[in-house]
Amino acid sequence: MHFILRKLRAAIRWTLVAFFCSTILAVVALRFIPVYFTPLMFIRCYQQVSEGRELRLSHHWVPLERVSPHLPVAVMASEDANFLKHHGFDYKAIESAARRNREHPEKRKLGASTISQQTAKNVFLWPGRSWVRKGFEVYFTAMIELFWPKQRIMEVYLNSIEMGEGIYGAEAVAEAHFHTDAEHLSVSQCALIAATLPNPRKFSSKNPSAYILKRQSRIEHEMKFVPAFPKEGEDVRKK
Image (cartoon, rainbow, N blue to C red; front, side):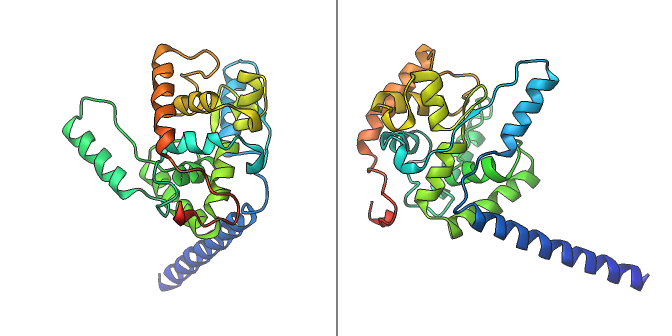
């Protein structure tokens, strides 16, 4: 019995060592390597094939300097106003969302995921709401905040996030919905894209509903109060 327990403890220990080493290496490597595919892309492709639908996957990686400077501002105004200030988790937003969900259980649950958390989920994990997946999300969020600058987190976020059916990233949505490239997206187009991000498969920046146009207007107004996104090498804390 002691032999079996000793073997089990050794197996667990080496599994943990392998997990931490491999995940740290992956995070460090993706600090420099473009993220061409994500788990969600493969999952969506599988869903399309299994449901007999046309296979659609449009994704073109572009560096942050070739993305409109209005787009980082728009997604911060919409998704994470404190992105440049926090270290991965916006505790005030989490507390506010928890209080609202507790006081109004009949309404749709509010989340408080930061851009860092969404990036960790998009690149390393799968969709879902289980505590196990949430735990991995916390871990990978801490890792990318430790090893990546804010500019890299935003670059990966804007290149990997789902922005429509089979559409991933700023370049792909710019081409598909606005017949331009990511670098030349206007303020209003960036606000419109950001307005759909809570559910880009339900809401379209190509054919926006009245609700999305209202969100676009609000985001465009709030963008005036969000600082310009810092360039590579600039101190984000001064923003």
